[in-house]
Length: 514
Image (tube, rainbow, N blue to C red; front, side, top):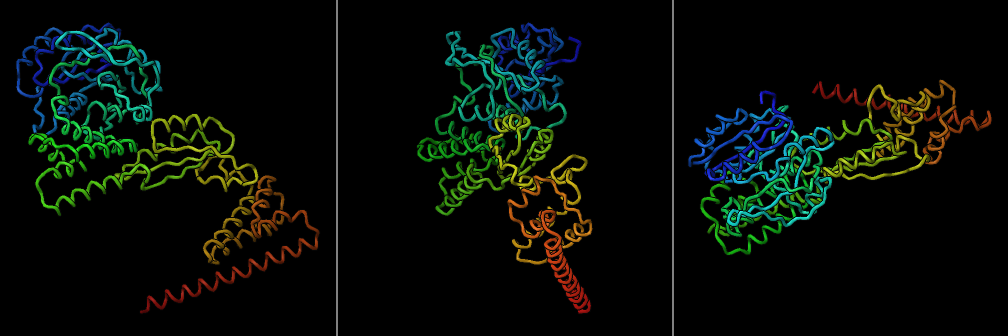
């Protein structure tokens, strides 16, 4: 395998020498036309794993291994996450897949089927497969699932409370271009899966190709119920931070309730690990179980409540209002500029789509499936409203709502706008600007307006503008009277502006002299 690997397989071991053969044989035995590399990190005390791995690396040039020493103060899951990220930095494949040292692939077609699918379906970010339990005591396989092939979105994954072991997923390597992973201590099962689902949909194959070993002491199963709830609450807090999905807040509240009721104790090791990582909310939950003063308990409970209030799914801190009207070609650029925002605060994106559907709704539905804080609404105000009422946006060199109009139509819209602003503000200054555009129309003395715009103005009964759009319908005498009224309006507000500027200049001069 001298070719550049298409797939990078990230394998982590921690005192698991007895499982190395099963694990590596399932990788080496893959029948695929594509080159791949196997990258291995060995953590913890050496139990003979290094010598065994050296013998494999001597026979297979695509196997590379490293001895790593992760911080023992980290949670066990976080240590494994750090080791996976260590390997990911060395990966060169356009796709990657992870594998825990005590698991293996039970199909020699896993690599071939995953790569072929992703090569031919650029719309998916991952290919995932079904998995089975492998009982280490009875040496037998079993599965509790009977799931059908499907497209898997972030919403369906969370709301249906699905579980996919991280090693069932073959991902596009979006990190090759230097994209950082946001939570280095949580490059694990559900957090990594949730994060990647924010980047695109998965395709789920119902064929079992991954074996998850049971009947052994795992990181999670070795904990008591209290500790399991704390660890589950921890991952929920991280997943909420990544996805902003309110379902995780509900789960955190449920876990907190169970933690409060539990009489079990937390091991000092787990307690120190969590406090070391300083995970918001979880640190407060841990401290509450200590024998601390009532005042201190009150502070910790307040911190928990503030977290739940700040990140409540029904109360985003910011609402982003977006409007589209036959602008499918700009949807991606617009939404990507919103999604790239780096903020600790929750927000929602509300999108209104007006006019004939040019495929915008289908594209937005893809975003909505991936990002639960995006909501889309199809509207139809009808031709009675002029376009400026429907949307706002400014992009040069395109046929936009405003730029596509004639100069007289533009002037008319400016008159309507400034006149309305003046009414809303209770301030005459915007009318000064309206007067400027009235002068331009009267100077041109042409009143052939776009019929839709004309009807819109009349429908909305905008003062001044209604008189202007009806100018061609008036008799010479009536037209002269309207012009006189418009000129009076202009002269009045021009004088107002002149006096305002004089007062402002006088005030500025007195202030500078003082």
